[in-house]
Length: 265
Image (cartoon, rainbow, N blue to C red; front, side, top):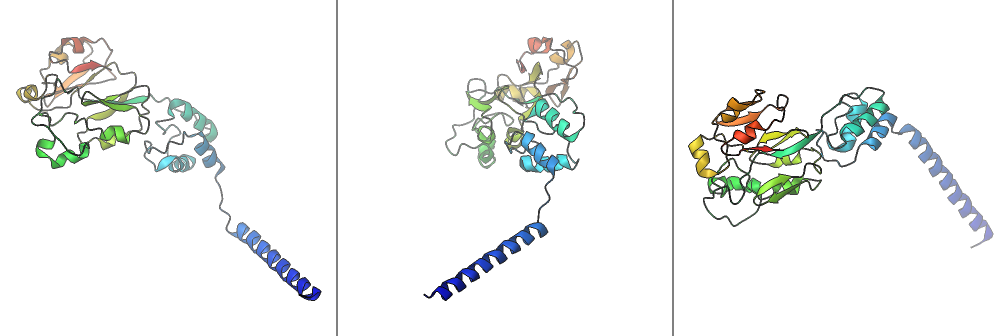
C-alpha cells in the first residue's frame, strides 16, 4: 500500500473515532439518568438481604420508597433500630422507636406428644400436604407438619426442625416474615422479641378433639384466664391467647395450664 493510501486510511479511522466519541458524548448528556443521591445513600445503609420482609421488592425498592417519602425510615425489619436511625439521619427526620420482632411457632407437637394417623412417605414439603389424606399424617390438623418449608424459606438459618416441630433461634431471626408467609398451617407469627410467655398451640378444636390429637394442645379450659393477675389472657373458640402489652411475665398462666400449652419464650 502506498503512503497516500495509509494516510487516507488513518484519516478515515480518526474521523470515525471522533464522530463516535462526539455521538456517545451527546447521547450521554441527552439520555442521562438522574440519580437520587438520598436514594443511593439509603440503599447503602440497608443490609442488602433483599428478603422482602419490608413489603417491597428488595432493598432497592425500599430505598426508592423511603427516598420518595412513601415508606418509613425504619421499615427494614432486618436492619432493625440501628439501620432505622442511620436512614433517619440521611433523610433528616426522627426515627420512631420500633420494638424488635421475632418469629414464634405456635406448636409443641413433637414426635412424642403429637399423635399420628399413619406413616407418611413422600415429598417432604408442608405445602404439599393439602393433597394427602387428612392434610398430613398428624392427627392435629392445626399442628406443625415438620417437613421444613419454613426452614427452606428462611434466609438467615434461624429456623430448624427439631423432633418433628419447627423451632426458631430468637437471636438469629431477623423477622423478615418469609417463614410466616410460607407456613400452610399459619402457625408462625411475629411477636415482640421481649415477650415472656406465649401460647404454643393453634388448635381451635373442642377440648376432647384436641386431647385425642396432642398431649400438649390447648383445650380452652380458661384456667389461665382465671389466674392471670393482669387480665392478659383470653380464650376465644377454645383457644387461649396472650395480650403481650398487658403481660407482665409473672408466669402464673404457664404454671396453672393443665396441658402445658403456654410456654416461656
